[in-house]
Image (cartoon, rainbow, N blue to C red):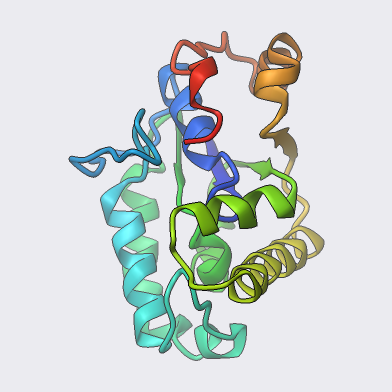
Length: 211
């Protein structure tokens, strides 16, 4: 039984990765948002139960996905949300291939981490994209009013992601956003080698790079 967790800042390609995994046989969720958007026309592939709990944790810590709360504030909420996180993982851990994706997972990791210990095989798929490109995407979507705030947000996600990767020893693979366009075959081969699956990348659309 293998669990794939897709980690990466917003606008780094996490939805594309999650969609490809889902089409390739990894159940990335039992219920996805009933919406796409101009910025994510092929879908988000975020299980609403996992993303909903992440949103609640962050909100109760006084932050948002654009204004990440301090890790210390999240640590204070671990006990409060531990039961719900455990129940969600237990409800899906019987599946042979499953996982989830939510950029906010980077911010709430401490709530979920203790409950991954009992999962047979946890693997991390890390979305990588140049920080300046992520900032540019955030600005184009007008999520934040100025470049300074956008850079602060992206830097905080990257910092927290680095801490996670320093603290765990789960197998992981980096998936570079630009490689979908620059080295498509290599990208598919990398995911196939890591997962042992026949990768269905039919979701990929060469025209959507700037979405």
